[in-house]
Amino acid sequence: MIRVVFEPGIIQGRLIGEAEIAQVRLLLSEHGDWSRWRVSQHLARLWEWRSASGQLKDMAARTLLLKLEERGLIVLPTRRQASPIRTSRKPASEPERLGELFPELANAEVDVALPELLPLGMEEISRKKHAGKQAVFSRLLERHHYLSHRGTVGENMQYFVSDRQGNPLACVLFGAAAWQCRARDAHIGWDAAARARGLAYVTNNTRFLILPWVRVPHLASHVLGRIARRLSADWQEKYGHPIHLLETFVDTSRFAGTCYRAANWRMTGVTTGRTRQNKTMVPQAPPKAVWLYPLRENYREALCAS
Image 1 (cartoon, rainbow, N blue to C red):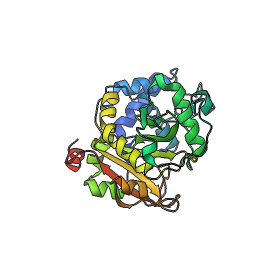
Image 2: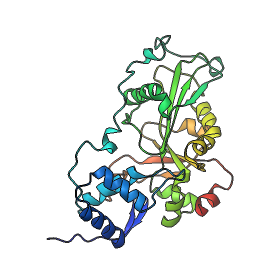
Image 3: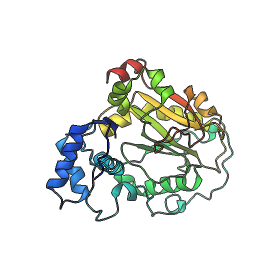
């Protein structure tokens, strides 16, 4: 049997060493009849792995186990059903059409001055009670955003933006911050340990879509400004902790980042082109501009002390 050499390191936001690997192996050997779901639940409880709001991070534990298996360090029980990590990415199928929620919408081109649309509606729809609007939100991103969309995992905020008559204008999604980003980390003053402690207080604007039939000058920067003023309070209410810094990555081959600049975000550097799943040092994606927006004055101190 070939023994896989393991170097201790950060996996899924946790420091994993030989002791942790041995603990996982013992758990699997003692409970060979358990499902993957039950193993991940038990492991999260065993390690008291919870979010800032106290929610058990069993999905993070499940992802960690999959990564350990990919590296040849453990062997998981045979999958009994499709992984929730993958199936949760599928957009909800109903309602499929915008008209089911917005019967007055004819997809006519919106080409007016911003004041004619004000005051904007800005609804945060990530909770279960908004399942119908979440389906439309996901469908719009899937169809019209250049990166498409396969659903959300982990802490996130979903803002559905509409005009004063309730017609949709934009979809804005915030989710997990990038685990590593040299330009951001240098700007904050993070080393690996400080980043591991503070990353939960940073969120990434992973999707920003102004609907393709909407052509309204200054709308995008106005939306960013409105969301920035409420996002930390929304996060505190839902997850039990604030957000200190916003980040986003802009593909400069497609966009100039004009709306972020107009909303007072700051460009702090450029990515290397390595993606989250890239395990090599070879760039696999176009470099992107790194834009940051602090939500408190002493954000660097707060993020380094978290």
